Image (cartoon, rainbow, N blue to C red; front, top):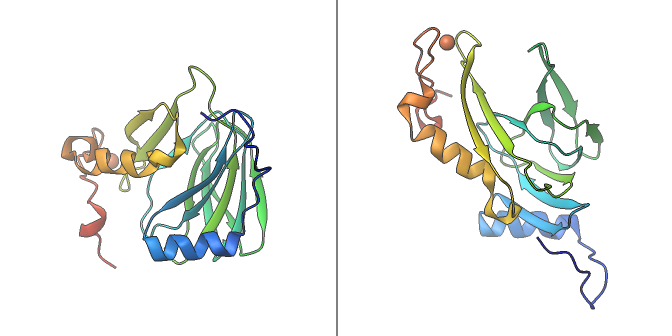
Length: 180
Ligand SMILES: [Fe+2]
């Protein structure tokens, strides 16, 4: 992780330009900076997002374009949704299971902090049929430019075993098998 401020000065990023770069490149994420105390990136929405992310950092979201439905789970497993429209921001405490759902023409600025030694990010899926815990992928996020969310998705959806519910037997379909 980078720890020094460049001689050229403090980073200033134009969010609309970053959005245009993402649209043109087809990339999912652009990291604006990452330091131990501050990690900032702009994320393009995914039309299909199913997992809940769990990490040790506070998280601030600012919606640049479009609306986010920020699904989150309480420690008791109750799910609720925070709706964040374009131009609005919100804060979420550390270790909140959260699933930021926003379409592919929507863009969010996310502010976290770098992970400390020993901190592991978790990506959890729950059965869409019965709601029981389905599978977890674990990642040590040393560099957010490696797009850990996309890697977790690839691992999960490439495994039929991971997508098969031990409780009810339902097999969660791949996104390209979803209807509508
Ligand atoms: Fe199930």
